[in-house]
Length: 111
Image: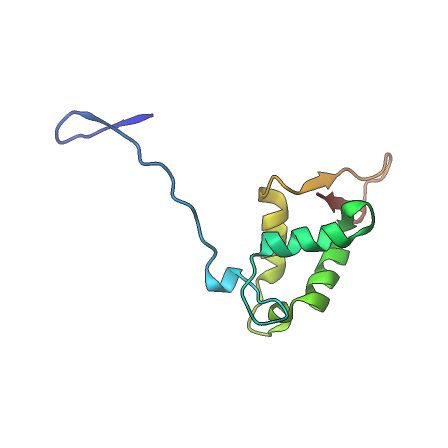
């Protein structure tokens, strides 16, 4: 894809997007204090789950139990980061609720 340079009227290629490294606030710490990306923690969580799938509430509980960083009172956005990673990362799939169920609480996530 090209963009027009309005000063020279020449076409130049658009820059490729750069890889986004998580900001420190987006990266919780694992048990030994090193930083671990949410996507990696979610993978570990779902990998350990029966049938490699869990509900969002169970994922939150696993994160709280296994990631000291999310227990920090100053880290208020971790649940939003979990939902964002589940939605945007193609490694995670939202499993539809059972047939006839209208409750969002029945939604599961899997690898």
